[in-house]
Length: 422
Length: 115
Image (tube, rainbow over all chains, first blue to last red; front, side, top):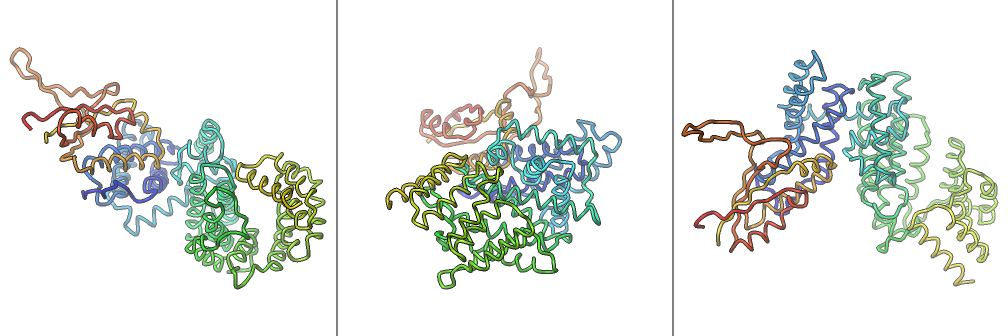
């Protein structure tokens, strides 16, 4: 035992990250049906740390300490609960064997990464709904609590708890396993893993008032899990494309709001505040996504993010390329939201009038009826044309749609701009 | 300066509360506890094992050993600190900053005799 640093501070997110890998690891040893038991056991290990470290000092290897104590707690729980029947002694022996090796040992680390990977793949089983997959991944491998997941998704605790209960029951009743699928099934499962990670990321990336930290954690967790998949042997180019996309977008998070908490549009952002490490991580994976002929939606999205990241004062943003990429994206995934984004590029390349014409059909699309961004983009284009009264009307209509408080402040600023210069 | 012993009891409510916390919250709580333990006025600290312990009582002049008072429904002594303070008032004031109290734990303060 060594004395703790003055402040008592531990490695950032140590508990959360260790909790995730320990749950994954213990679930493999105890069997997926005993996922809850694995989670309780890990909770017990953290409680022991809380009750011991303040008196005895920080152990030399905190992660190793938690790891060993969690295994011992699992052995106690297995003996006490007798849920494993005749397999009890064999599993106890396995737990005992696993408890004496340090989690930092390269081989063990490799095994733990594999455990986490299998866990994500099980959580994203097609039998489980996407909402439940996201919650379950965050709870088990992410080390998030029900309350934290609820806060990140702006949902209430009971809803999330219910999703988790249902997902765990599905794992038990449908006997889902931690075995990696192979062949065609693997490809499909990989797609559903990427879909879940992308959804998790977008939830965290969406603009909401308050709770910024937990939402940023959501982005970082999606990125971490993406990197975990990308570092495995089953990674395909589109995995790298998604990681690139997430890294490049996360890099921009610090610049997205100003000190007053107000939104800053991409083109007005201070590039000096973009995270350089995440940018280079993004480009690293973007390069790796180029292997092979596959062009997925993630590839095109990553290319758009990379084009933005590459632009600088010296080399302004290549709008024709952005427009070309949106055309490509539309071909892969025709969606009104993509068309709306494309319209912004159309305005830059072919003029505002053509952009207005491009979004006209979207205004009749029922899917975009309550979509404030459509009205905000329309207002923005009208303002550029000097049609201030119409622009103001469009921004006001946007305010009537559901949007977050920072977005509302942004819209009010735009209305003032229309009125002030009218 | 006198020495005071702080006896920290884990109440069932506190343990229940800890069990409902997320890893992130557990870490924050652990850090707070550890920061307190690092304060210059703390001289010694020990965590006690979680088993029930043993109690020896003398019955009709004969010592008899039983298991300790551990029970799920009682406060149990989790550990102790020795701190330095000028008097009880100061010892209480210092103890008031201990995070154990935020989580529903109990602290008993006793002056070490003659210190």
